[in-house]
Length: 317
Image 1 (tube, rainbow, N blue to C red):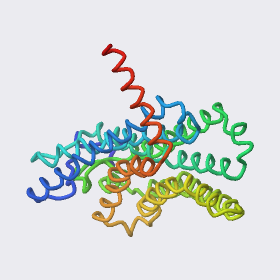
Image 2: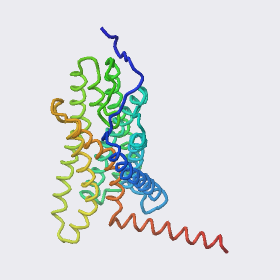
Image 3: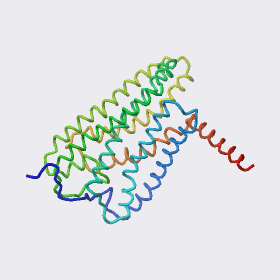
Image 4: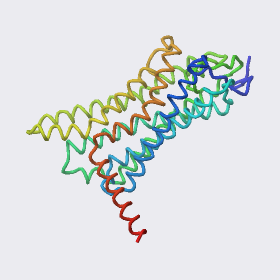
């Protein structure tokens, strides 16, 4: 019998998205700009939220955390994926794989709770506008953000510790483009039913719990919006939630597909596509969703640009 946590190799070989050289080049050309756009977009949101006083609100406080999270999410996956598109050997060390898996799980869990915090912010803004500043004070926002990160990290610790109890004796070929836990478990030389059960039940609390609370929250929000007497008022109230609704739909749609299915229904190519969407595509789309047609962000950017121009003219004199 193999000892607990024993491994016979020091690295995983990643099969990636494809083995065809020509397709790899095409994918590199596609995903390299996506990564740059994701970095620039999320960094821009963080900087604008910090530099513009008009964006010093709970909504943009949480959005900054989401952008920071998205930067890390893509950066632990995409650079290595891009390297593997151009290299013959696609490997990651065992410790590197565990680290990537831990960070990925932490960020995924944190995002679930952050999206719930953002939904609560919208609930207070629309359902209790007169008490908004009293309820959503900075201390509460900091506690909610801290709780989101803590919840994500605890979720990751549990899954990582359970995974490290398994022996890995070969083969070491991982049918994925990064170390996502369902794929890693497939390589264990032991029964992984306990790990899969833990993943499923934690997904109920970390994924479905916040998701159902978000649905309940939006039930109250929609009820309040429908009570607004003017169509202009209803459109304005709904527009403050539209971006968040889109982000929640994109994120939870793929996460639920990935983690809430029975283990026997997992298909490698489908899992790769789902992982690609929520770990690479969604972080790129989030800044665009929150900034396009967002008058607050556009106005804040204009203010910063105006101040920069005035400052440059001052130095010129």
